[in-house]
Length: 281
Ligand code: 13P
Image 1 (cartoon, helix red, strand yellow):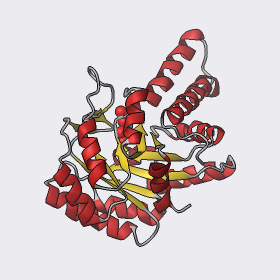
Image 2 (image 1 turned 90 degrees about the vertical axis):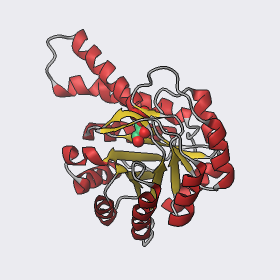
Image 3 (image 1 turned 30 degrees about the vertical axis):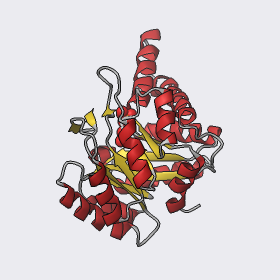
């Protein structure tokens, strides 16, 4: 299946492809293991802000590709650039081979968001590269990206989608990057309006901490890609703390890191279930 068809297929079949953000290269292996064992397509993403820290676009891309090959992974693996605010960086990632790009112009006036997103789409669509755009504001802080919750307006969503030929749209509707302070308050009424007007796969950012019921409702209302980072980070950190606590003499990196990688794998498996994505590869 072409990248271009994958999200359409998920929307039609009422599941979402989980996007898992990687924070270190050790994340890659357990994420792939989880996807393969659950027979789920998977999106492995890196925030543009974290790319230098992890070795650069090409290094990350090749490391994921090499792991896929070495582990004989058979499920679709989409390599995604998350939250890029630079058209130049998006072009560079596309040249290297990334399958999917998020150009995030959500903090710009809508006309500039449209103009820059369109530049990325025009470049990406010379090949089979997906482009995601964003409208409104996701709250919270993550990977150096901070923002306040601002509900996406239907009119802005309509303009961005119809004027750019985007592949997917992330309309911010109350979700938050990082941990929620209080209960999530997703705008399902607005989601329904956007879904009714625009037949495009939707993307939910800031999904850690949203209940299973609300995630399923979001999938029902057109979300075909759901992004997780914090939940996996918490599972990893919890296990790491426990391993070091259990044996204060431990210093062998494999013995320290091994159980945390298993924790990442287990966390991703449970997110795949939440997205209704198992057995969809
Ligand atoms: P969480 O950290 O809240 O899971 O959000 C992840 C995300 O939206 C990445 O784009």
